[in-house]
Amino acid sequence: MAILEPLSIECTSHSETQTQRLGARLGALLPRHAVIALHGPLGAGKTSFARGVGAGWGAEQPLRSPTFTLVQAHHRRRDDAVLYHIDLYRVEDERDLASLGLEEILDDENSACLIEWPERAPGLIPPEAIHVKLALVSDTRRQLTFSTQDAQTWQVLLAFRKSAFGV
Image (cartoon, rainbow, N blue to C red; front, side, top):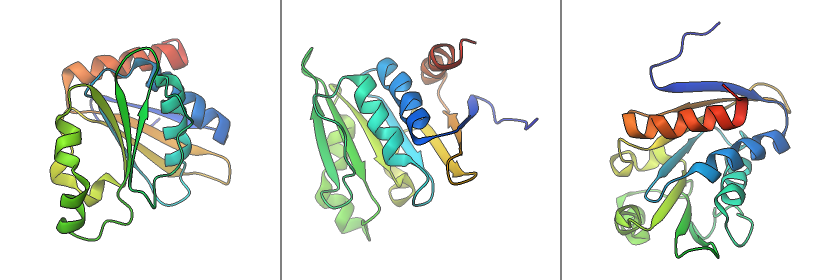
């Protein structure tokens, strides 16, 4: 059994559908102003997980990869909240980051953010972010590690663990 870092949860997904369902469980619990940083190599399932988060959160439209648009805003019918799906894969330098308006998005108290490739903007990721690391185990299996550095955000992850796994 692996020894986990403090404030972390680890699980294995056996399919893309299961990865999306895990995302939906977390999305249903996502408070306003939350940030989820999605880490992992190409093909690890970041966008599949994000699609699930969007569904659980209540996005009006299914999330798609924002690789070319870089930022997509998703609304939900029940309130005026916005879920931003941000993909930093194509960001090459600080000028690219500045042109996206990420600081304003992250400061918006009425929004939540999913950020793929957060390592391209490490200074912008808040300490209370939820980090989700997806690792390839096989063609269908992914190892997911959920972590945070924040005690309040840890409560969200504990609620997620109970929702997803019953413990």
